[in-house]
Image (cartoon, rainbow, N blue to C red; front, side, top):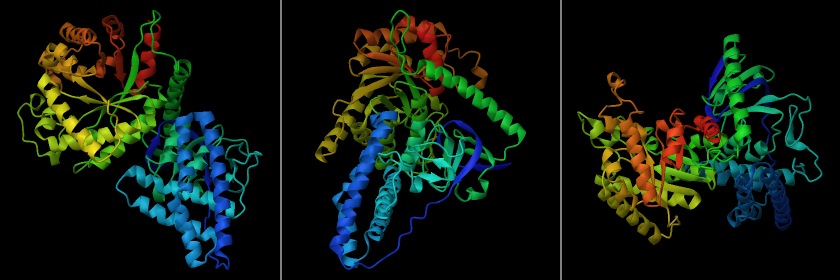
Length: 559
């Protein structure tokens, strides 16, 4: 057995035979030409044909996966129609007197290098897109037929080693695809009935190829690098799209374990098929919004795969915890915007920085505290170091132009803290207006209810914000005076305590008195033994781990 570690880009397990897709040679001959104008006309005609092909591909993707997933190919069409792109190609033809194919390839390399050099991972991923659309133009110039042809014919690059894109595998089998790389248009045209999963040597979790793999429900791993070996063709493999592990020629123990995991996943999938798209509503008609909690942008795929209605808690501190230096505004905007775009119209509630207590970051240079749970953390850091807070708020506001983002403040104990946070938010809005940067002017703001003080002040807090979300982990800790990091206190830290449940009840009642909604984003939200209690108390929303969404929906619908 050979074990390879890559980067997970789409969850799931695949077990099957490997089919290695041969790398396509996009080398083109450099020829000197006598008539630059005729060569420019060739380029323009090929570009128009490529644009029409992308329109057909866009319509195919929209029909199968929805309009928001098809927007990628609208972006590809805009790339081809970009005046700067055309000017670059035609400039090379005119100045160097080279053939259109070579000019397109050279322009693609220039634009790809420009995107790859940018700080934003989203923009870096566009390097693959510009190569993809340029390859399409080169194929037209070289007379290759596209697999999206209206007559249904499949030729050229669309057939490799028995795998037909947008059609049926020649040998009738399904395979795990190994490739150096896959372009977004290649991935979109794969026949899902014949492809079990994807493994590539290159690529990133932010690429459009990765997003399409998640949309298609294909387990996918990228970044295996030099471990990619064409000799694996025909061998049995297991890929774990959650951990990023690939096992070539797996031993019996590994096969047995992954068959078990796959069977469990298929049971979950059956539940998904039964409940997908169904409202989270009791038999008596009580509606509850069922969201999911995430820690990283890549987790959004699991939210969609488990049919959550939105993201109720995006723990933004992980953008800080996983770095050795301050995350810039651009880095954060990229992360928040990626999630907002991937979620489409579904709500994305992002908790502002919650560093401190059990989450320490060296570059914050926080002083040692004897009792950090009651110390300098979360909103207290943000309000006393507004230069850090404003960077995050600007990034959140900018990202709000790309989706349904809301801001949630953690560790609130007073109305003044909320007002101070809103003042800094207004400063950030004013700056962005001055810079003519778009954002959602009516972005919602909420607070986490996780201290007894915030429960007692819930009526006053409700007048300041748009929603409450109860963080039951910390609320239990502070209500029962039990440090949740101390294992010797486990028997005393009972989240089912009547005191904790009374706190939750008081919070819900205060929210409803003031016409705002109230949810739960702590671990208790997924405790099925308390679902009946939360429904009786009138909870409006529950946000849980993605894998808890469907079991919870099932319980609520049977209530």
